[in-house]
Length: 347
Ligand code: DP6
Picture 1: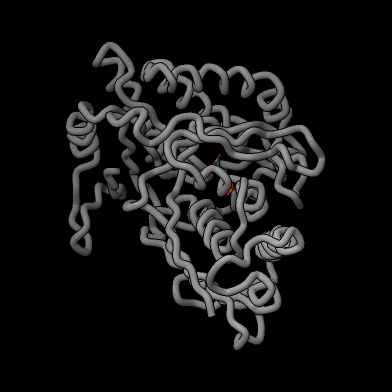
Picture 2 (picture 1 turned 45 degrees about the vertical axis):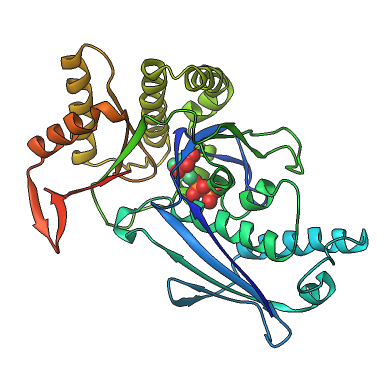
């Protein structure tokens, strides 16, 4: 038997991925960009093992057995084995430990856990698939870019393979070989940058992101316009802002892009609404705070749910936390600090 354990963190997009041009290969209609959180915080931990004793591929997620029938798991396992076979044919991967020949003829067992509260409703599939693919690649001794494989598990997962700021280039090819993630800057580039996560609701979303973006692609003209005309420009602008550590530009584009994602959701027919009243109050509060400061000090961004992610600089954390505490007075719940429906995670 041979086993590998890895961890992979969550990423928070500032230019959002919303919409696929190929649902099977998970190819997006626009490029996107995110920051990867550091390993110790919100991450998935996965152990993968191969053994001649295993009778079939199996997987456990947070202690519960999951079916591997899902085409996303099948695609990932097939692609990993295809790449490993290629290496074996080239006479590689036999150096130490279990040989590739053995690993390829044996079954895998996968065991994955998240260290973050499911209540946080954060993109667990990004950390989960990224971790799964990274661990399998180590086990099967695969080298080179694996973001193309992670993307086939969950689009946003390809961005969690790298630290710092990471772009996922949409690519043009039909086979998806150029739709890969690329690190823009490392985690050391902007050490003053912080993310606060305000957990507004732990309710399951009424429509998941995959289903939601499918309806948006079919019905929203705004989404089509955004993908063709707005995202390409924004990607360039925000990349330059990140490289120059220009918080004003970075923060403004981040908020505008989040708002456009949710405008596209509202433009979808029937409309999709992920933000709730508390999310809107947070947006309003952030703009009031920035107005009061005379410049942008904090930016919000929302994924397919009501929970807010705030980007800010370290020097502003105390002020923003004080504002949040003032507007959403804290209540104690199970020893955690909940703020009138908000739970604050400082990262
Ligand atoms: C709103 O990566 O979860 O978080 O590719 O269908 O698995 P699938 O979708 P997923 O979508 C994430 C969408 C988003 C924006 C983003 O992270 O860019």
